[in-house]
Length: 341
Ligand code: KG4
Ligand code: ZN
Image 1 (cartoon, rainbow, N blue to C red):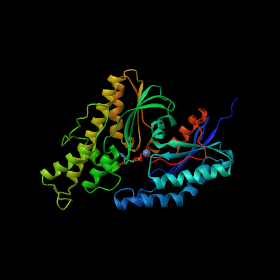
Image 2: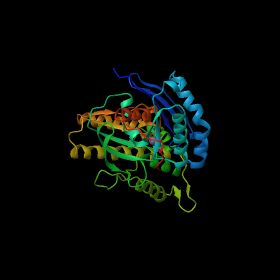
Image 3: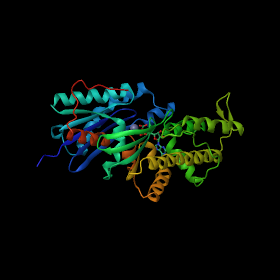
Image 4: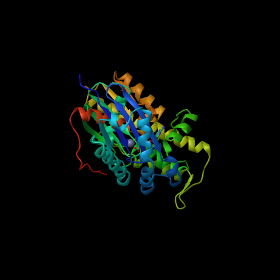
């Protein structure tokens, strides 16, 4: 019988330095990361130069922690899988250079992984999802709808034309004086008012399976201005009451959940043979959206999967998993492996 491979995954595409070890028989042996949220919080978003400096400091201890936690050494590793696209160039370079160096020095094989393919297959870390299925990937940088036909075999059905869903949460949070990242705090505020739709923001007019979230940000802004709650010239929120923040947060959350549900409904009509839906990426940490989509899919007789929070946000476990099936498919990279923004 063929010996199962052990894959070391490395992820540094944005603001998380992450490492994981995946065993083809035993599954995930470790999944560790250092989050830079506390560093970037003061700036209201990720500062690329600061991100790459932090990756440089953390990459070695994090990879070592990933190996230690899995109770393996570099000698036990067969393949190194590293995110090489898309992402912040300086951040990607740290991961790719580190991975290439240790792979070269210890005679390991290396595979460059698309971060979005990592998210798209992250549901497999905890579940076996039947093919074909739909996948919504929603994070701070991306929002896409995929038709997933097999491992590494997928088609983009729709993408955001402007902002990502997570970006909408982050930008609108900033507008109403909430800290970065916006998603978790918006969820908390919305929960307090029982997810009511106070302002009925527009759900978008796009007819195909693409998304658009920048209009939503503008709609929220004009709503605030028209109600005398925001001073456009001073770029300042005038009404800083908790009540207003809860109402905006709740209306926004319901609106985004509606948009996702509508796209899935539309995709079911166009692709009636899909057996399941997966919802992944940082925004999939949101319990309200996840439970709405789960209920909808179950009513439509489709299975629904969403990874636990540690595999929704950026992580190296999903990178190691994609590395695992790419190794099976013989899709190794060579030493010319480079980054792509
Ligand atoms: O996947 P991720 O960790 O990083 C990117 O690749 O962008 O996603 C981060 C995004 C942020 O925009 C954040 O606001 C959003 O995920 N997010 C959430 C929640 N937790 C994180 N959005 C909605 N609800 C949440 N609970
Ligand atoms: Zn991501």
